[in-house]
Image 1 (cartoon, rainbow, N blue to C red):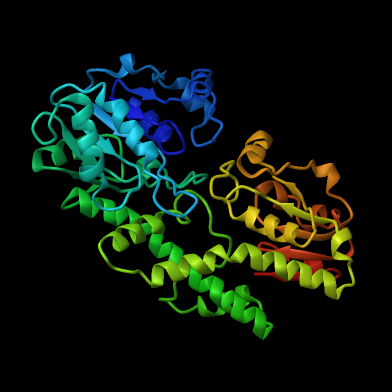
Image 2 (cartoon, one colour):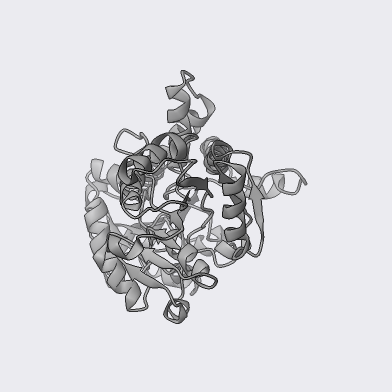
Length: 420
């Protein structure tokens, strides 16, 4: 067995498969291969002890993966600058796999795509590169990833896995492999397109629900009431869905809806609800920055000389993953008004932050005497010592912006507190 792509998704899949099969992990990034061979995973998705105990083989050489019977492709599917699906990684991975294929091989894609990509895009690439025909010589499968970065409860083995194959025999081959390692079992989807669609709507549904919460938060802010208080009251009803407002980033919720809308537009349908939700969520960062500036202005803080600190840059709490973070939206809006904020992150890699966003992370010691503190990402490192550590960063009467309502307003009674 071979797993192509050893990131947040591929590595946990590979480690799990290696418990049952002779498994090779392939990645084009030499530094990633070196790191994994040394027994460390910088994503923190696999514990170093588990990695070191595994019998996995890691490589970036195509020769090492030739002639295997089962391939799993788990590479990213991002969007481009125009928010259109960027299939470059999955297409490149398909060309790589094609060079290794022999008759009888199954190729399963875990990457999130719109319905049709596996069979209509990846299949022809595999055929062209291998000289083998899909459905006769080689066989396509699909099993969408459900890895939740940083989640140590809903892991690969404990989540029901959706599986699909281009014919009944392939479906059973794919199902049996995943059933052998996934304790929660599998769901056999009717077709590959059904499985692709199921994956992309999982995150689209969450995105739309969070967009509703964000819009409600903007309304409640105008009313002058705290969104968290409203949601706690409404949440006492048995069928109220418990979503909350916030910055919606990451490589799933903030990206996957565009794959579905792109396919819809390709077929002549203009989505409305999905794109409206995306528009609302994309605007939250700027709103947080504007609200911060208004609060400082009312406190007579000269904006161009204001010391503003932001805690957190990753897309969610307790992970080092910076992909598609929306915190840079807050930074960009502040900079538009002449404020150059100090940004600290307890999990992120400094070099990656600068390479990805042009943001230089600050040291904790540099964060003092802040006119405004924005708690953007609730890493445990920021919350474990209670409010005291945060208040030590702020000047007297400073603005405290609690993006996801992780703090208690009563603890900041002497400050200008606000939450989304």
